[in-house]
Image (cartoon, rainbow, N blue to C red):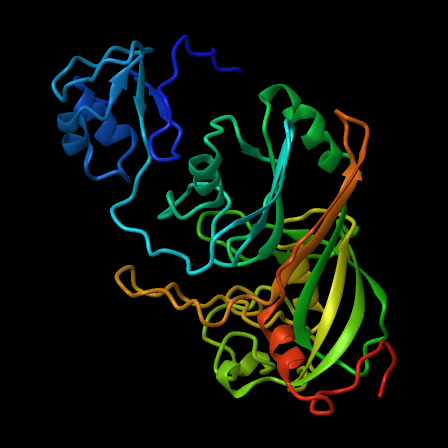
Amino acid sequence: MTRPTPAWVPPMRDGVSASRVAMATGLGDTVLQFLNTRLPSVNNWAARLARGDVLDAQGQPVSAGARCVPGHWLWYWRSVPHEHPVPEDIAVLHQDAHLVVVDKPHFLNVAPGGGHVQQTVLVKLKRLLGIETLTPMHRLDRETAGVLLFIVQPATRHAYHALLRERQVHKLYEAVAPWRADLPLPLEAAHRLEEPEGAGFMQMQLCPGAPNAHTRISLLRRLGPLPAAWADGPCAGASAAEQAPGPALLCVPERPPGPELAHYQLQPHTGRKHQLRAQLNALGLPIVGDRIYPRLWPHPPADAPPDFSRPLQLLAREIGFTDPVTGQARRFVSRRQLALVALVASQPAGTTAPSGPGRP
């Protein structure tokens, strides 16, 4: 059912658009009781109400003891007590009346969720440009860097999203993962990936049946051994038995990958959740820095400072399509470089492994 369009919408606050919730029966007699029951993950509703940070449909502050009226709307702004700033910021690659294109850094969520609000691309971009109607055209994982597009006008959202549904978008990614001399490249990877039922699962499972995930994998260059500074991190060329404890939901070949790394180009033809990470892992090529495949690493304690030193070595390099609104050819390319690729490029000539698609 389509929700009715509100007659009045509060303005943004520090880049955060207002959220709304409709009061309902059976969830408390007062506004405070309703909010504590309906949105229990927010533990400071009393303080927000006291500050006047919860508004009614007419934009007036609501008191904690106000009567809960089913069907009436409440407005509020999402926030979290503390967010660790991501060291790199977004870079705007392109802006016009229809699209805004950014170069996303690692460790930055696309949109607010969980413990991230201000440290998200959407909020940073709204704060930077003052465009409240921005919405993501597509998504990237928090750990993935690269080209990310936002739609400016609500009236064109359907047209741009249709490009993705109809697979009319060309995408290229790059990744650093172990090198396997026995794996012929380029190859067309085809797997069936399914998300397990139930809450708490983050890994996609490799299942029997018709493939629903297709990716062309090519070799850009061999990079040599893993640097010592990365040697104790996730998916550092170790066998599955040597990874952090936790269930392995994807089967990898019995032969573990060697310590040598390679720089790969990935062209996905479909858009399944975690597709590139899961498919490379299924081939015995877990991406360096991956904390989900092949093993799910535990989250650090909430009060621990985040470690930004070893990002997932996955980059959304390029995206292209024919614009459904203007009819022009669009192509946007990231200016970023994966950390391990940059490290190899900075080494003196002759100290790295040979490049090229062939075997040694």
